[in-house]
Image (cartoon, rainbow, N blue to C red; front, side):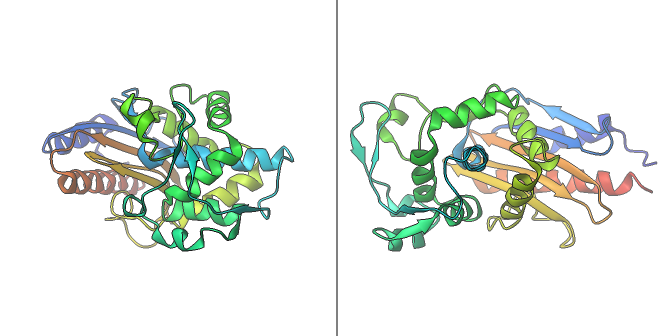
Length: 281
């Protein structure tokens, strides 16, 4: 066995995070060896940014299983949504969205499964809001509560400025995101087949500058990132070539230098990977 203990690993992570101005939370949990886990500020509340898109995906699959609609059903692409504050209409700003291609499809129909794919892999805000309109934010939150992610708040879609100004934001904790990803990894949310489909979508994530950045190519990462001003997140199931798996959630806020924040989180991911690799030596 490796001489580096979990206690040493936690100290190494904390010392890395201390080099960057900001607040951080970390959950690392092996799915094969129960004692291999690290929790740092795991119950601290963070703005969810795009990490709330994973709960939305789960809710979509849950409602499909309940027979409310099919993944092959289509939704009309529109850019008008209602604020949760007063029902007033607002539009998404293409310049604030990481998936500009979706805006070329306004007025067309897209399959729900394709919208889920766009929401997760390129973090389309437009796809997210269309899906939240379809399944209901309150239902997303109820489902999260039902699986034990009790502190997650999914109140609204993206870019609802009136709600933002009132502080009505979607929030997460590293602890809750870890619960969600573990349930998906173990096939314990919706059903096993749905979990396999969700994992496949998460594995096709296009933003790979945090958890996967310094990992070897043969390591697969099923993950969802999130970023807004001063915030950089990543949440994942990591698959090692030997079949072992672990959950890793890295959250940050109040970053003075977001690039430095991303770099240190990517290095934390690398440190955890090396720790896991050395467990077998």
